[in-house]
Image (cartoon, rainbow, N blue to C red; front, side, top):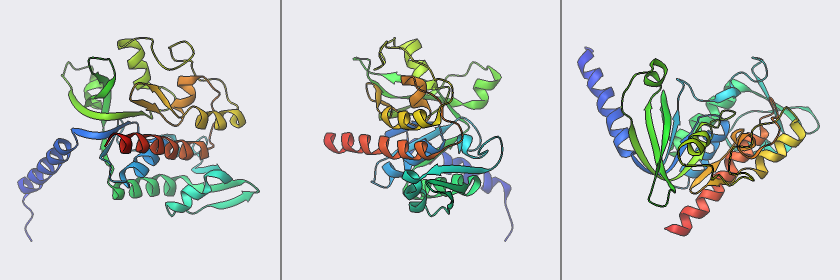
Length: 262
């Protein structure tokens, strides 16, 4: 078969255009494609909800690719092993309660299952703002190409309407920062502001991630490492069980809300 370059171009443009148009009005928008965001997307999409994940980088996976200090192995604890099992990702017991997994297999396995479940990924795309209604509740996100942001170009963005937004941008908690800066110091924290991430303590940090996986502003929920940056708790380093459990938990919370409002 002869390859026509223009047909290839038309196919890509039409396919992407249709995908973006179809996902301009959705149930859940996820900011950040780390393990928590991907996990949340999987558990929501498999229930039939319309979910889009926006990742500013070319690849999803966040810090999971590099394991610890670019050693591409990750550690998870007993409580999270079942999630990797569900995704078909192999684990090896290191010692009682500690399991190793290949970080490349983990990222690709999580992503494949989430996309197969129906989650749509828009990579190279930054969330630069949130949409608010007359009550100042979150009702969507404002997107632009990451290259536009990096180049400092003055290019107007587009909007995605969403019933709920998941903050999954990790340490920077960029969506939460935008809300504080532009909507006001009204987060559901002790002070209404970001409380900030503390120094490393894996034991406390892992437990805090699950505790802090919750709504932090009206219609906005936080998952993964961003939880501890928003609500103020230690970081936990290259232990990834909390990320997976947090993604599953935030999906369950939002699923209940969506089902109630149907």
